[in-house]
Each structure stands twice: as C-alpha cells, then as structure tokens.
Image (cartoon, rainbow, N blue to C red; front, side, top):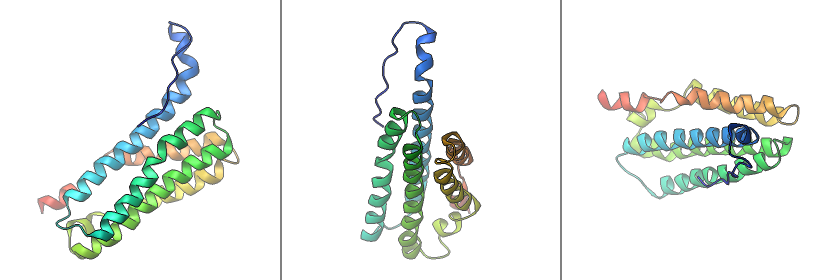
Length: 170
C-alpha cells in the first residue's frame, strides 16, 4: 500500500505526535487490506474452478481495494473532514459489496453444497454493511463516530474467519 507518511520535524518522541492520526489510519487501512488478502486467499483456495465471470468480479473487488490508499490519504490530508471520511467509508462499503458480488459466480460454479457456499454469508457480513452505511452517514454528523464504525468492522474481522478452513476438514 502506498501512502505518503511525512517524516517528523524533530528527532524526539514529541515530533511523532502530529503523525499519530496518519499512522493510525494507515494501520487501519493496512489491517483492512490484510483481512481482504487473507480471506481472498482462503476463498480462492476453496475454488476448484474459475471462469471469466469470477475473474471480472475479482477485478471489481481489486478496483475498490486499490482506492483504499487514495481514500486514506485524502482523509489524512483533510484532517478528517466529513466528506473524505465518508468517502473512505464508501470505498470500504463498495469493497464489501464487490466481495459479495464475487461470491455469486463462485457459488454458481461450485454449487450449493460447496465449501464456499457453506462457509460464506452470515451475520458478520450483514453487520459490516450496516456499520459502513452508519459510518458514511455519521461522517457528516461527527467524523470520529464514523471512524468508530470503521474500526468496529475491522475488529469484527480481525479474528480470522475460519469457516472456509473448517470446510476443508469435513
């Protein structure tokens, strides 16, 4: 992930204080990309076949994920103004929706009894979408509340989802 982190002005710990918001949003974005990367790895590992629809759906997901550094940088540069914080949430929402869209052709080609079909969908996905939508709206009320929504989703998924891994054992 490419995000410009500026060097501190001084050479002591106090010089790092102004960088803390940027470092924290970088960390949050890195965690999000890591969550997608690990889940994507497990998902594709569970696939026996890939077709053109899956490849295009995957490209759709990668497009939204590629915007995470831009949204992160804009949010940092604006000092967490409402519109950039909402745009960050919109980017995360679209990545989540594109993940869901990608599952449609994967489930279609592998069938309803496949590991993928049994291991995807559920409360975490639904709660995530609700929190993203709430975060986008709350960005215009108080950006910190939106940030809390985005952090909550990351924490929800930080513990790896083992449904696909468990599916391999059965």
